[in-house]
Length: 80
Image 1 (cartoon, rainbow, N blue to C red):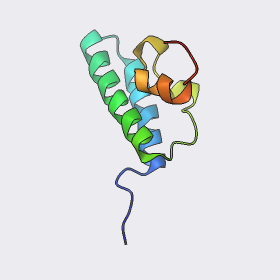
Image 2: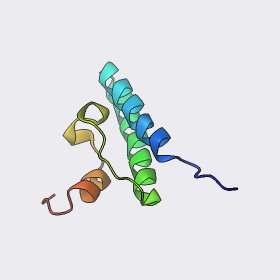
Image 3: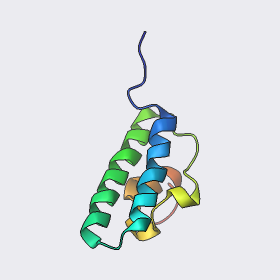
Image 4: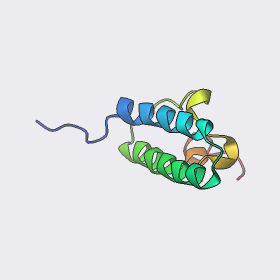
């Protein structure tokens, strides 16, 4: 029996955890590190091909910190 190495619910939950950590700090270096980790989680979700629901607003980073891959996936028609 095989299992998905990163179940969608676990990875989606991780986005919320990262967003909460991001909001709790004002340290620019820490925010950059969290945003990079968030981008990796977004990429993992995209690669599963099973990302059926965008994260809730509170589980997202501010737009200027969100990874480009997120917008490309969820808003493919939007100009970047």
